[in-house]
Every structure is written in structure tokens, then in C-alpha cells.
Length: 431
Image 1: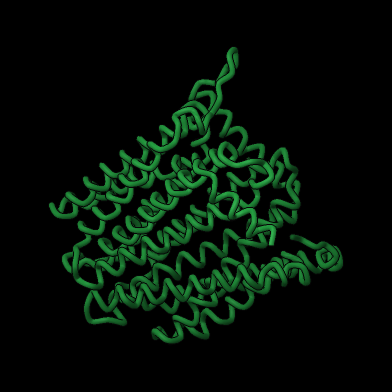
Image 2: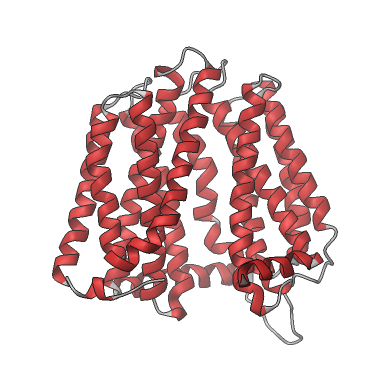
């Protein structure tokens, strides 16, 4: 098979292997660190977790992606990317050690969150640099396969890192501080692997006479580009509608995630270890839903059209969330976790397809920057709303019904759009 052949060729390339190793170690460390942060906030015996604390943790994990992400390229185009991997991972290893010491010292929450925020902020530069460096280590003919392999392998590494962190905590062989230090060790490993890459190998190149905008000018240009992306998106109704639907569904998924955390912590278990085990199972079940969506969505999109499939995902969620969630029992809620994982990822894959297909190439990067911001801000916003609505035990009928209404409204909005152009969506085939 051509793909297998290309993979073999890629893995023979030393520089690609080294870059992939940096990604795998970095993202495995991210998975460890994120689980350590979540377990410290929610499942530490010495802390009484609240929805507000969970919302704060989600803000720490996701807001850097939204606030820093669109502007990361301004600085990445001025620094050697290899040095970003080296010093960025060294800095994250140091900051993770600081976070571990803060956990042991039982410092005020704001100081802990400031340290954790610093780690996740640096992460955005590393991930963006990894994507930008790939064309420097593979031939153009292999770039598609490399783009498929590297992010997928990185995601699996993050999941494996998270699983390792869960295992360390569940076996009782380490505290949250020990888990954070495990993440620090993986960050250090990523920095050491980066030393195997030549300083100038990954670029960027700076031809003589080329004038770069100052950082402030670059930030202003980026902000202006996002505004232009929004204006272009407003002229592309189908893409704007899909992005709106995805944002609403991401909001719902975030609200239910906070509810699940509180249920695992206080309603379904008598101790932190049992609650953590239930959370691990729920995350795995939701991940299975993500995988199922990746398998069935391409087939369904070619037959229904992306907007119709997003509508089906929203409509199914509107029905199943109250049908399963109002029991507030582990079994039905785990089924809901699978369904929502499938629906959310199916909608995201479809939205990506619509944006890629309906947005002009000159504006695609700017529109995806807007997409990235909306995707993460919706999740953090959902956590904030949940903090106001949820009781400590996580049982909120109002939240379940509210989320179901948002899903239903999203499905109705998409159906109305489909009725205004019933044949056009079905004729289009997306790949």
C-alpha cells in the first residue's frame, strides 16, 4: 500500500524521527501534566473541589490556546524553531518542578494556577513550531502522510501520558506532586532530543534584506487578519453556520464535562481513588466515541452532506442527554459519554470540512484562527456557566435541560438552513 510505503520511508529519515520524538515526548508530558492538574483540583483529599475550581483549571488549560495561539506565529517566525523546542521544553520542565513544589507547600490557589498557566502558555509555541517545522525534514511528496502521522501520534502520546498519570495515582505510588515531576522529566527528555537536530535545520530562513515587522506590528497584523477572517466568514453562510453550530455543541460538551467531574468526585464514589477510576473510564469511553466518529463521519458526510450530519449529531444529543443524564447514574452517563464523544467529534470533523471547502484559500488560515479561539473559549465559558449552576454533587436537572435545549436549537437552526437549500447540500461531496 502506498501509505505503508510512505511511512517506511518517513521513519528512515533521521531528522523526521528526531522531530517526531520531540513531539511524542512533549505531548506525553502534556497529558501527564493535564491529568495531574485535574486530579489536584478535583480529586485531592486535602481539597474540596467545586465547580468554580474546575472552571479555573479548564481556563488554565485552554485559554493560552485561544489568547496566545493566533499570535504565536509572530514570534516563531523570528526565532530558530529548534531553539524553541530546546528552551521551551527546558522552561516547561523547570516550571513543572515549581508547580510540584507549590502543590507540596499548599500555597494559595492563585499562585498554583499562575504557575500552571505558565506551563500551558509555553505549550502553544512548541506545538505551533512542530507543525511549522515538518516541511523542513520531509520531501513535499511525503508531506501529506507526515501530516497525518505526526499529529495523530502526538494525540496518542498525550492519551498515553494521561493514562500513565492516572495509573500512578490509582496505584497509590505517587502524589500529585510526583505526577507533575513525571511530566517535568518527560519535558526534559524532549529538550534533550531537540539537541539532536541542527540549530538551523528547522528554520525559519531570514534572507538578506528581508524586513520583518516588529513584534507589536506583527500582533497588530494578526489581530487585523482575524477581523478580516470574520468578515470573510460572514460572507460564507454555510461555513459561518457550521462554525456557529460547532461552538454551541462545544459549549454543551464543556458543561457536561464539568458535571461529570463533580459526579465522579462526590456522587458516585466514597473516596478519591474510586472517583478517579470512574473518571478514567468515562474519558476512555468518550475517546471511543471520538474514534467511532472518525470512522463513520466521512461515509455519512458523503451521503447526507456535512450540515445535515452536524444536525443529526445535535438532534441525537438533544434527545439522549436528558434520556440518559437525568438518571445521574454511572451506567447511563457512560453511554452518554460515548454518544457525546461521537456527536462532538463528528460535528468537528464536518465543520473542518465545511470551512476547508467553503472558505477561500487566502482567508483559510485567518478563519481557522477564529475557529480555534471559538472552540476553546466555548469550553471555558461552559465551565464558567456550570460553576454558577451546579451544586457540589453535580446533580443539576436545570443544566441537563438547558444543554438539551441548546442541542435542539442547534439542530433546528441547521434544519432550517437545509430546507432553504434542500438539494444543494446533498449534491456536494466532501472528502
